[in-house]
Amino acid sequence: MEKKYDFENQKNGEKTAKNGENKPPESIETRFSTRNQPTSQAKKEGWKKWRNRKSLLDNISNEFAKEIGLKDGKNISGTEALILKLKNTLIGNNLNKINLQQANLALRFLEILTPKESNIDEYDDENKENKGNKTKLGYVEFCVASEYDKPYAKQEEMVDFAFNGGTRLLLGSRGYGKTDYITILGIAYHLYLDNLKTFILITKEKIRGNELVAEIRRCLENVGVKFQNKSLTRIRIKGLIKKEPNLVSLSLRSKRIRGKHVDYIICDDMITPDDCSNAERERVKKVYEELQKLSKQGKTNITIIGQPVHPKDLYSELRGLSSIEKLEIRHGEIPELDHDLEAQRLAGVSEASIKASYFLEIEADLTMPFFALKELDFFPSTGAVAFIDPSSKGNDWTAISVASGNFENIIFCGFAFKRSWDNCLEEIMEICQILNVKKIFFETNGLGNYPVRVLKKNGLEVVGWHTTENKHSKIMNAGMFRDFIRLANLKFSNPILKDANLAYIKQVKEYDYNAQYDDSPDSLASTLQVMGLIGKREKNKD
Image 1 (tube, rainbow, N blue to C red):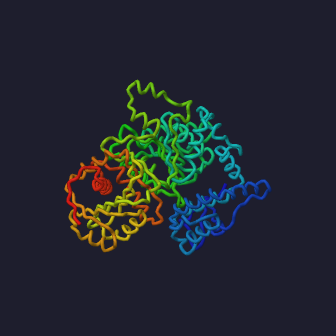
Image 2: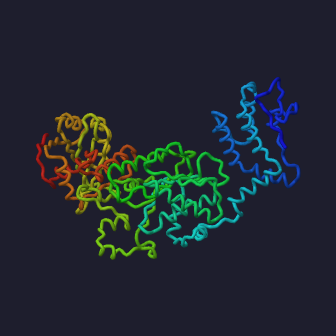
């Protein structure tokens, strides 16, 4: 039986054995520098296999370094570096300051690093419980083993897409098994393949997250995975040596999101039709922004799964971002799972609800006149007219609408700058040159003719425009022409113009009575006024 020594009763370099023998024990330094490696060939092979698990050693190193208070523990990698740190910390000149707890921690950790003959086999046996044989089940076989039906090809495509890294948006028709085959089986399968993977599952309600965690646990149990815990909200697989569990479930209202750095974040139905109020939409967007900050090794892997609910929800916003990978599976792509939509219509289900749930289409009501405007990737070069709605002090936006006819349509290429008009002169000149602007109308409300004179000095043909009409009424009147209006989304070489073009499109499409910014849609409506398409009450000033 190995002797235990009392480090608190040390004197003059001697240590007293707890069994009463006054025999100087092996020094700590010797203990750190000497490893009791196996001598037989079989034991040497076991030791070699154990040492090759570098990721496990690094995890142990980090955890132990944190326990003993090493500030730079996060930079420790490998056994040798750690032992050197322990030497310097626990031995050095501070030997008398080491307490019993620190010493026991050091010795216990050293025993892990230098396993005896017995615990090499014990470690391998424990790992076999979760690692299993070299041959792992495929995803389809795993689904069947978990007592689910075999997935269809489109469902497998959804799973492959969801776990392919980066920020991803997956929208799918109702009844296509998004939660079953991605959230439940997808997470379970990746944990089955690698018990060191870590996930966060975000759901709208806490109870829903608990249900999903329980089902993921059941699926893993079906294929023989063992666990360290029985929690309803998290899963720790046997053999995991990390601070974070393999899976933790959080709700939208959870205050424990910060500080959790995991391999994957899965957001399942964060937005639902039963509550899509403005406050709830803003809450979802804030949670999304916090999740984006939980990067691991500089990369954030987030998959957002659901169905669009509102024109201004997170799904609609992400659909407009070219930087995010997107996959949309609509009604008809998995015929075997399609619902009877005619029966739903006969039962009184609204067409708007059917379009959102099955065809991923959101119909804006009359309060959002420009939400469904189509976008084009070109602008006519035959000549255009522009209207500038200026910001005087940069508190709101300087909006520029450039319009040109194309058959029966009016194409608008617009720009919104979060600065005053006089700080946009360089961009105004560039826009007029690129889009061949022949004439500019400049709103002079509150500014007078000074801006008109400045622009004229730069060689532009400018007319002052003053109006007293109610802004919202003017914009809603312009909405009557939405079937003929198109928005140009162009690829400008100047990134400032590109960002301003996107900001303009966003403000126009998302306009309603309570919109935070209305400068761009107001500029668009004023352009229709100067073209004589909608009524106006104004004074022209040359």
